[in-house]
Length: 128
Image (cartoon, rainbow, N blue to C red; front, side):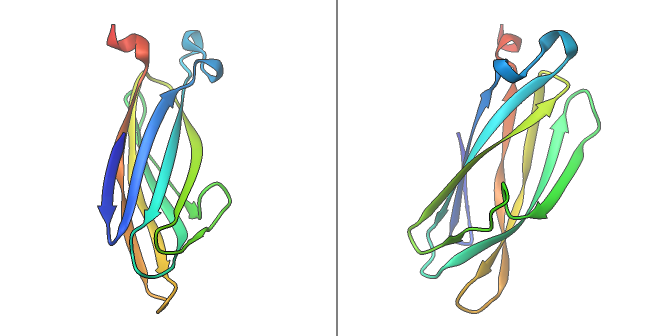
């Protein structure tokens, strides 16, 4: 589990290897990641965009950006949490992701960035 607080927003990420979506013989390693977003501010915030840097040890790094997360742009009141699960397919046993979200302060309309902590993926068999 990786956790980071930026501008009053706490991001926690946990990962899981998914054997059921992977094909080791074909070089497909699928991982889920769960993100928990906590609003520790005194004002409402809305998640607007995301930007991800994805590293796969056997491929070139890639960048993903877009509106919201999993089709949502949630608004979080002070003390609220929003959680979602997504996934990533690698062609190697090792990789990592990190990035940032852009949030809007719903009181004054300003935008601010929140860092997503770097988290790693490792195929469990690699550890042996």
